[in-house]
Image 1: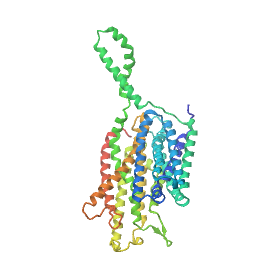
Image 2: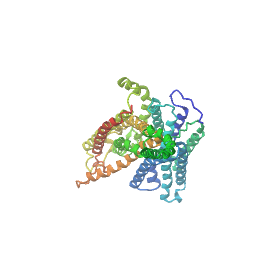
Image 3: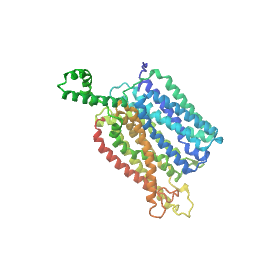
Length: 514
């Protein structure tokens, strides 16, 4: 039996805090590899930019989608602790393989690089949703929508954002300065140490082993057979001997058929279908979630990004840290300032419901895209006024708009994450039966996987139609004089606004989320 770990002043048990720390280290390790993988493939593996970008995008999308499949297996056949243990071994094997490949790349075929990357994807697919669901299992609150539950998901997101910030900033510098072998070895060691700490604390955890969904299906089938037999026996009143022989099994089944059938948890397919409308409306938020990694960075490359007399160059990708910094700064204030303020307005203990929290974040993401479109329109206007719009004139970035004009859209997306992403985690966790908690977390993660694929599809479709006039003026042209990212941003803002309206309408069918 697990030993009990006392709660600290934050309201979370020490086992919860340990799991949050383990999750933040996992994000440090993963982001330490993923954030600079494009650079590794282009400069070290010598892949073309387009091939490397497609490889990274595909790997990222598949990695985000795998938790949905692995979670079904975890909730149906394994317990969460066993899933974490096995998947963490795959995860570490992937990191070790990637580090070995970086050290021995001169003797390794390029195709073999994707084996350790696949192991990392498989490991993360089982590790992330199981670890988060296992962490929430440590809470002893009977009310699944308690304030303690919300606090756990909040600090969970704070932890993974802190790990992501360190992975994005520190590891990119080490990899570019000291080499890729060391740059991949550090995340490997960090991941191995965190898994070892997690396993050493096993006796302190609360191990919840609920009924499997498959067992529920089998039990429901048995109850249906019992009910059919009972009806047949009632129709055969003349056969008293048979009635007497069947009395005992009927008595043991009648208790279930009377009331327990209605209490049977829904199956996996029915649960997913019930959440599918909300899941679908969140896809546009996931598409916007992809912009800082792609077109926000390109937008910064087309602007003045040097400061001071010494022309200190600011890498456009560095502004992505503004999102994580916003989350880290806003998250602690959410409980101390935002919740009390909303409590005064609404009278609710948590201030707002989970779905309202998601909706506020969706609105902020729409505002972020409107700001991005306005800034891009201003950049194009300054480019044309300075004479840089003519192809025969050399482009002078020093006369262009400063890159710091992009900070508001990054900060707005960071604040929207505090509302929507944390709300999504809590929604998909609490809206599924206890037997399917890992599936609920995987549904949340799969939103960003499908969003990644949808983003790529939208780019292809919009590029086709923007080129349809025969002038070869794509919205995403490599020539900054022809690119019209402002049109793309307006399209995303409009589509996301429509998704929000549909989301608000669908929320009426999930009114139990208070």
